[in-house]
Length: 434
Image 1 (cartoon, rainbow, N blue to C red):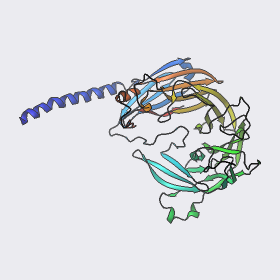
Image 2: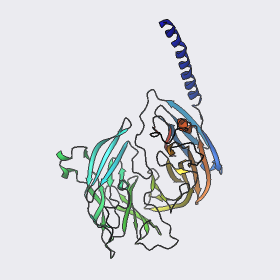
Image 3: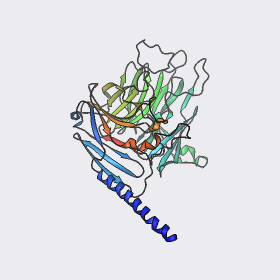
């Protein structure tokens, strides 16, 4: 009987090896272009002939590198010898996260802002260091309103990095007064606050921001939306008197290198501001892409009250090669799906007189959809090209990425949840334009 069991196991092993062999052959057969295809939806590929678009489709077991060059798509698949950890903490659109293996979290208090640095280790962000900023600022609640300290934007928007140096400014609202600024942070080892000399880690103030109350109700009229970095420059974004100001500073000396402004820039839910009836409002939490080689910064603001499947955005491209110059402003409408804020791609680059936008959008849920969880809805990577604010090309990258979600198709909503993991489900990453 034991011999029968042993012999019965041999055919099963043969079948398993055969399945594995077929999978390996299929994967390597797909190494050149594989299941990738660019489908033109508007215009022709001539609009992207002068740039190269690259990226990768990956999970924890393998990755496929792709390049769209001179209108031709090339792909190559690499199977990892051992599973490689992926980022367990995903980007949220507009969140501040550096691309060099470090991420920073800001905990804000009325007077102290604690910044924690983390490094990726086996897919998880492990605490590495701490820094503190204690600006001489004070917050006053608006009359008749009892709330906690309210910033103009998420606290992480105040962080930027130039080389190995990290800088921070508080995204103050108009109800802060005093003396704020841009600070170069000094990190001490995480968890050792009680034993280090705090004076040795006092941040260096390189730019002074005077928050003088200039309105009858005690407001300053200044709202700091964020701090960005372009090459060796720090870029402060603020809204003052309904204008968006873009100011550039040298990251070492704090010297003002130039500024530009955009008028009629109204922020939402500001009841004390008199706005024209036809005024357009812009959300505070923007998306930014910096191109240090070309000294360009591209900003994307959600415009007005966008509907779920109709994303109205204003994209502003700024040149910092000689002072500060706004070179392009494009109003766009993305209506090919919902913003994939959990694991999506949003990349922008202005070059050759054209604005290139690469976005991953998730198909909208419908009554006929069999999927109980939005994260499993099909995702698509779109390429948009604008010239003088006109859409001249739209294409979509076709792949078999969404086949990974097949096990979720008949999963009931009553189940405990959908166990999404980047180790098992492929995603697009490291998108770039050259």
